[in-house]
Length: 373
Image (tube, rainbow, N blue to C red):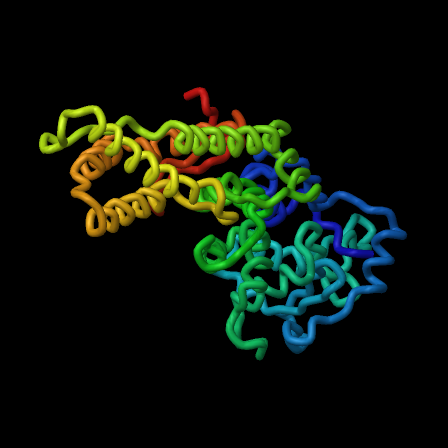
């Protein structure tokens, strides 16, 4: 039988304290199945099936010694020296002590078999590949796979979060930064909320809102898993921004005539026609181009168009003055940014708070915050 960890042991209490009181999986709103607690039992058939299919990890299998402890994660067995966990993971360090526990009842028969390959300490909620990746980070001398890859860091993230390996967790967050590594937006958003990574929230929501691609059923399901109305709010936000962009195209800002502009009606109608054409041609980039175009990018396009027209036509003093007003009032981007900001709040729902702009390293946690504050 597998090691059944005695709840009376002080080490066991320390090891499971985080599981019960630290970063609970359920508070993020996800439909996550809680890990099987230490001491809980599975059927003999399930346990024996796992034991029969478990294989030694080719790298993290140190020679047998009094100090070595055997873990099982998924279908993989790891025999490690406990010192690798000291200073890296308090829960795993505590668990190593449990592998050496052997108690006897009044008749002298042991309650718990000593830890061994046939009686490992089972890590219920970390897969073999996740635990191996975490071991590669903690003890790089025992593998020759080369530097850690992005795939390794994706596996390290949940394992490091689960076992309080803070340095590995932060390194994984940095390696998987949205600007460095592509992860589907809905998946990254779920990861950001599940593992409490505020710095990922805004860029991921921006990517969701600004994408013109249709969402798969899997994407929709991920969104609904933490906020039932998230998908509906996302579509509504995209529609609001599209409407704003069409209004820009239909309603160019009124021309502000320069002091040098002739006051006769014909001259002023000509100024208006030139401005409207430049504005509409530029704003088509907000709608016609398949990829998302930032409103400020379109502003640059208008500025370039006005400068080009000034070199080939009559003086464009009225267009230049009107453009100055557009910039000063933020006509191209303020409404769109407001719609995007409101949409982000709506997509996250009431359980999670949208991190502030220009998020720093000391950002507050996004878990369990009430947006009504």
